[in-house]
Length: 188
Ligand SMILES: NC(=O)CC[C@H](N)C(=O)O
Image 1 (cartoon, helix red, strand yellow):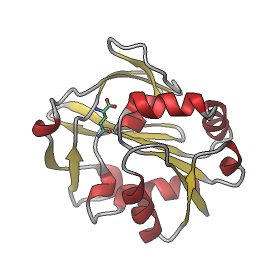
Image 2 (tube, helix red, strand yellow):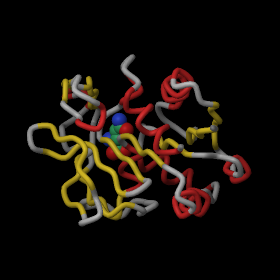
Image 3 (cartoon, protein in one colour):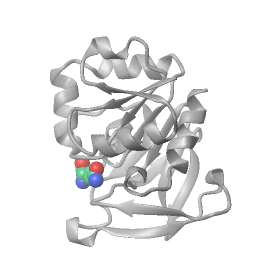
Image 4 (cartoon, helix red, strand yellow):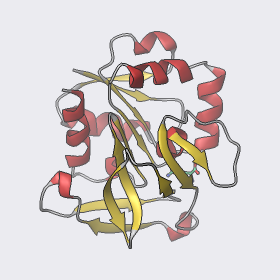
């Protein structure tokens, strides 16, 4: 099992470490040829406009879309979630547009309004999951094929559509790797 982490910009190292703890082989992905033997991909948090520009510049959109079409799981966290969305409120930035969700960027405020919360996430078991929100986006609309996995104050912060998983929060910044394990199971 080999999972890639898109390493153009953002919280790459932490995802690599979390995946390694889950016992899978991890590849840093930044070129088309790195996609050949992947079983899944994480698009990390960072700055969605920057990551989007780099995806476009290195011509990686079709490789990511190809992975999704082959049924391989792709997980977008924070900026990664924005990139997978069909639409971003009030912006025409570059998007992969593979998931039927609309998102609002920085919906919880600025950097200093970053926060953590223990959220119940049924697909991870009974123990609440510690979530870290950093200039996080929010899902404002979603289509009928989208399953809601987590909410925070009635706002949708994690969801799944088939083999696409997204979260507003950063699961790689805690020692609890259940979200990564859930993703790895999607690849099995
Ligand atoms: N932590 C993050 O990934 C922040 C996302 C960033 N605010 C954006 O809009 O791209």
